[in-house]
Length: 432
Ligand code: NAD
Image 1: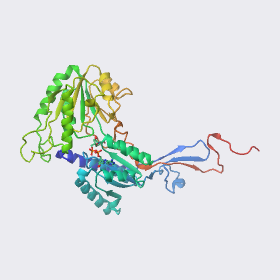
Image 2: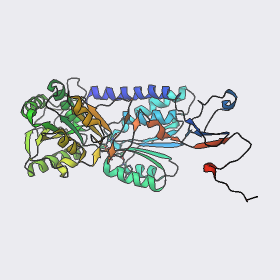
Image 3: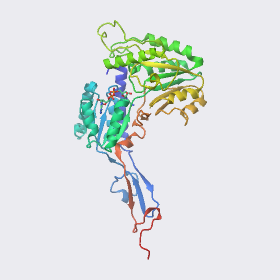
Image 4: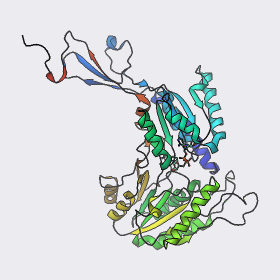
């Protein structure tokens, strides 16, 4: 999709990591046994249990059932890892999986599917258990509407996710949504700028700003604005676009010509509303062959006149390297701005003061699904559940309890006694 080599290799590593994780997890996908209020009864959450449960008296064999078929619809910007997050958990839960990748990343999908099919077949499982179908919107719509698909895990834009969510919901299927982000970094006066500046630099221009977790909003404390921006600006100006496969390249192209238009529209909107363009704001001109004619745009830092989180400049996700800067005096103001947008994926606070950390991670703190401290917005590990709140869709994938979405839960009450009492002491018999 145009990302640089080290990020591409990292993405494949992420697939390997989640596959390892799921193998271990497959031994721990337990339900539980709940005490019953009725004598001689037990309640199993999950419902499948091994026959010897009663003989050995063990409660550890209660596991939920598979759902059936899980479809994975994925976005262009993570053409490998996002499928891995879903496939590994879905397979471990016992489902068949059908993948529809972005139409512009079919080669990645074919390569991954061949590797996975080989592994399955070597282990006596048909490769079609991890099926692939390529195509565009029409194929996606067919999957979303199909009653044969028990769960749809969708990763993509808010606009498409809204349609997918309501269609799957209307046929009472299960849906998992991982949608757009509009992520903020908040920098306090006590932050270590040697750490923050390179992290914000990566967050904002890594993958040419085409990560759901890219840093798009930067809130700086008023006392550090000049020092921070002069260091960040010089890092920006040192960046040269290049062949993404060249290990020296940090900045690859945008994915499509349409994305270049979105970038230009965003810059124009900023200029019209009086923002100062500190650096960037244009496509690269006169790049040497073979880069000429590519979708390379200059990473941009803009300082809008004011922070108004209702203004589209702040409230929409521009999938390109455009960073908007706002200045605050109190952390409460920065948290309000962080939370004031529709999206809720990733966020990061930079501070060495534990009191700020308490405000940031507490109930009145960041409302995002990812709430980092002294770690950038971009770049997650597979061990924790990944996902965002609000218009990012509330989905969770990868680690944590994410696997619990890929199974069919049942509450199974077992009566071992000689009586059949009703719950809550209800009596339903004719008075003697
Ligand atoms: P997109 O919404 O255009 O496409 C995503 C997928 O949906 C593609 O496979 C596409 O073919 C399919 N599709 C399009 N219309 C459809 C329809 N009506 N019904 C069913 N399927 C349909 O997204 P994109 O441009 O490929 O990706 C960029 C977006 O994805 C950004 O908003 C980014 O933030 C988001 N994203 C989110 C996460 C996350 O985990 N939250 C991760 C990666 C990307």
